[in-house]
Image 1 (spheres, rainbow, N blue to C red):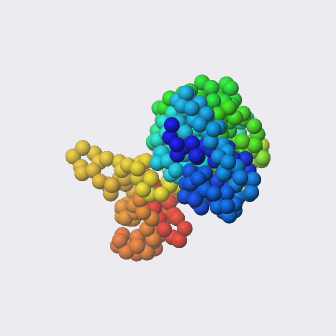
Image 2 (cartoon, rainbow, N blue to C red):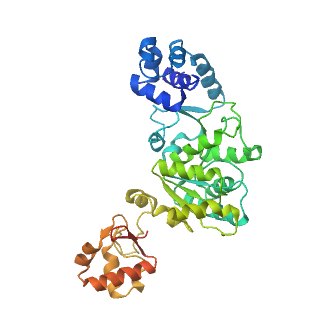
Image 3 (cartoon, one colour):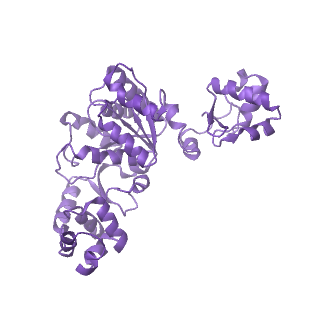
Length: 377
């Protein structure tokens, strides 16, 4: 048994400490083990409540931690501590990152490029179809689809990713051995086979209502961005979207029928500045250039021609000469300022601006803030 993990699990059993309190304690002492080895005076002086300091000094939680780790090992679950190299780096960035994750499946999946997809438990046929198709398309582009295994949109997203033979991660609001809803047990088994089922809650924890907002921060924390498909006014999906904003993640929304209550959430997010999504490319093109280029490598040239990241687009043959000249200046991995485009294209500014507008209207390029332009991949 890994003694270091025992101390991490032990801190989660200390009543009154909490995730943020534990992080402050670890920051102060350097490790959970050092906190357990500290004197009562040292513990009381670092800002934790007196009863918490006394509990840690008395080694509270360590016996329970040993039993928990043994139970997890018996079911082939992995316990990944915050200090482990296996802990997902993107999740580690959030201020209230879980102290540990219980994982069934492939832990390495949690560190791959991921996108969250959430929505109502009572979707329309349109919502289910869009979630399934979008998840399938994103999984085919090597993105891991992260969701919450709930009924409705979550289940459709997981199934879409599985249909593409892609990877998907289910984040539970219960213990790893308590699948909720029960009818998704088979789906959880499929996800664990090729992806991962994850929880921060101890084994045996039931799916109580307060757990789901807590788990939502993990869905967004694991992801580069979160897509909201359908969500009513008070949906938990809007909590996930808010958490994504706080974690500096992208927020995407699929527009819906304005007369449908389930469209309130995504339509509200669109008003607040979320990126409108009607296809997989709308998601990927918002990611940093280096990630986009990993997910969408350059199209190889035809036989007999040199393969190059700067090879002409498949659309280029149908462009007018001035459009083609401007298009060939632009790149997919770096936005260019309009003055730089004018200088490189060797055309008068009015003609360059006209060509940029035509290319943008054709959907081949995108304008970013500050008169910067970039190719769409």
